[in-house]
Amino acid sequence: MTSPLRVLIVDDEPLARQRIADLLAHEDGVEIVGTAESGTTAVDSIKRLSPDLVFLDVQMPGMTGLDVVRTIGPDAMPATIFVTAFDQHALQAFDLAALDYLVKPFDDERFEQAFRRARRFTALEDTGRLHEQLLSVLRGEPARHTPPVPTLAAPESGQFIDRIPIESRGKVKFLPVSEIDYITSSGPYAEVVAAGRKHLIRETTQSLEERLDPALFTRIHRSTIVRLDRVDTLHHSAGGDYDVQLRDGTRLRVSRSRRDALAAKLGLG
Image 1 (cartoon, helix red, strand yellow):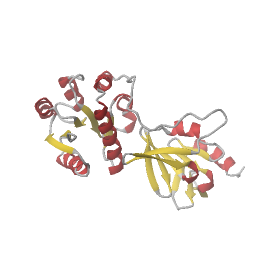
Image 2 (image 1 turned 30 degrees about the vertical axis):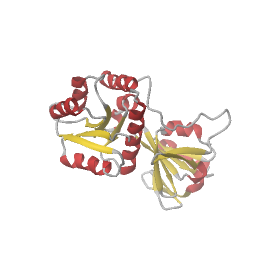
Image 3 (image 1 turned 90 degrees about the vertical axis):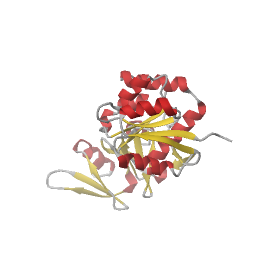
Image 4 (image 1 turned 120 degrees about the vertical axis):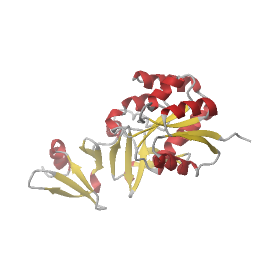
């Protein structure tokens, strides 16, 4: 019989600890071995309980989550999912080096993605890579390795992707690009919206833009790509700002630097 995954939850906010515990309650083969409300108690709990996985809040008074890693030492630290309220633009080190991280407030699907990744990682017992990644977080350096997740293969010259891999509930499904309405940035992830459903993938909008056919998709904002045949109406105000309204009624902001290119692609001259 497979041993349960032993989890420690560290956060100075009781409601935050409870939210993670509630989400873990829906997962099979998980044992919450303890919770900690401070960095100091987290260090003691990690040493005493030897958990397989730690959900570790970054911003705690006194001893932060990174202080906890420094105190335990990257070589002795269990698999760690950082939990943070940092602005997404400040997360480059975590994106490149951490096993994974959750930005508060996070939804159920984002939690599940991080947890599934952590479960696969601990099952592989790839501790050498984990320790290297934690050390890279402390140094603020990019790690040489990142956890394996579905990514888009680079298209051959002159060709573009026709479907996108979506990881959900332990499976990888393929979403045809013909079903996509629009794509927005979500930190190091992209949120792909199709038929009202949102899917998170570990790709940047820049990476996706390079792989999508520009005759079908265009960037209308630094953080937004839209499928052109989904655009129903172009709204503009007296101040010169533009929004596009899609067929389903969704309205998306158009940046001023991109409105002329959008108008040209829509045949407005």
